[in-house]
Amino acid sequence: MVPAKDFKRRMVVELDGVPHMIEQIHVQTPSARGAATLYKVRARNLKTRARLERTFKGQDALPEVQFERRPVQFLYRDPDGFHFMDAEDFNQFTLTADDLGDQADYIHDGIADVTALMVNGQVLAVELPDTVALEISEAAPGVRGNSATGRTKPATLSTGLVIQVPEHLEPGTLVRVDTRTGEYLGRVN
Image (cartoon, rainbow, N blue to C red; front, side, top):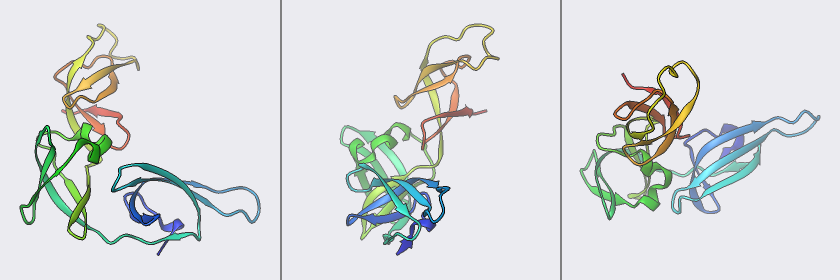
């Protein structure tokens, strides 16, 4: 059992009998005397991909799920889903876009550092790196002289994901994107 005060991002715990991965933790310390510190947790159900938000006190505890992290390689995408290969035993598996949820927008040819979460030999989810490099495929033309301003514009990336980028960036530019928040982080040189 893991107490709430020891929760960490990407930890897998059992909530309502189902494995959930902790995505965010927000700690609130009330100012009143004797008030307990509260831990607001956003977790994702690894079977249904649904998000769940719960609040725990510091002494509340949940069982940690025993799972295995294995490196995998993204092979290709087709109408059936996203195909991966286990880097250790070379077994292949497929996850649908529904299984991946928001992660599908970041998976592209050549993505590295992908990890599969396995429980009892079954793949429940994949973990992506915190940042990926994607190419801008469509964006409105920038206005000359606006490179010093903080204005942004929507840009469609090679995977179909639409994010806000600085106004001076053009199609063909490689950008770094945070896979946790979907935010633009910078250009790739």
